[in-house]
Every structure is written in C-alpha cells, then in structure tokens.
Image 1 (tube, rainbow, N blue to C red):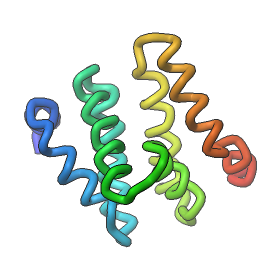
Image 2: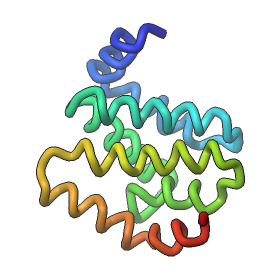
Image 3: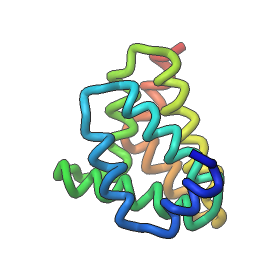
Length: 126
C-alpha cells in the first residue's frame, strides 16, 4: 500500500472505521498490532486522520458495549505479552496524545488514559 494513497483513502472514507474496528475485534495479535500501527500512522498523518483513529475507537466501543473509548487500548496493553505489541500500543497512546492540537484536549485524553489505570500498568512493564 502506498502510504499517502492508503492513508488518504481511509481519511476520505469514514466507513473504513467500521472495518478497522472489526479488525480489532479478533484474537489474532498480529492483526491487532497492524491495526494499531495504522491508527498511529493516521494520528500523525493529519488531523482528519487523527479523527478517523478516534472514530475507530468509538466504533469499537459501541460494538463491544464498552463504557470508555480508550478501554480497548488499556485492555490490550494489560494482556500483551509480546514486547513488540506492547511497544506498538504505547506508541499509539503517545501518538493520540501528541497529535492532539489543543492543550485542553490533550490533557483530557491523557487523563482518560490515567483514569483507566495506565500508570500502574506502565509500572508493571518495567
């Protein structure tokens, strides 16, 4: 996939979020890892790409009946045993926070992760 063409396609087609959310709903770690890498790329690609990543998390949240949109990231980080998958999840968390242009929103996302107990999980990863 040509990165600009593929990312532009996802940004221009909001329905693609449903496909990404269903790909997250699998037992196959390698598929989930690729989806999270793609969501990270979307975050740093553009603000519209970042919004597609957020939309994907919302779609997953609705599909699974979760209360929090970021729960899937925290749950995956807790369950992950492979260091490369943990690294990809942590990179995605960083991409979500850093790519948020408004400081207030950036703090809100960071606090959502903290509220979902990210800090104790990070301490366990050491």
